[in-house]
Length: 88
Image (cartoon, rainbow, N blue to C red):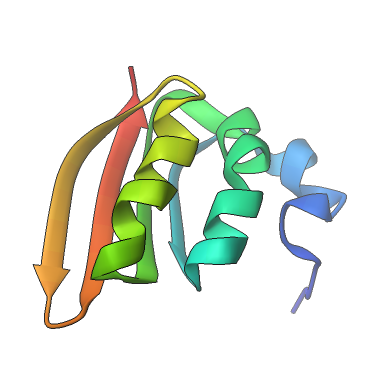
């Protein structure tokens, strides 16, 4: 078993790029990790982001679309949102 510090772990660039990244954490960390996530995302990669409240989803999506990632789907369930994003 290996435990690391998110994208800062030495194994991430060694094993990437990744075709799928799933993160279920709060909006703030999702926004903070946007650049790191897309750096290790494959050219045809997909990001599935959840753990944010509905009212935070636009801000999270904007952090990724500003970096060239396209929002493909938004799923609201109760007060929570899941975003599906893909490289443009």
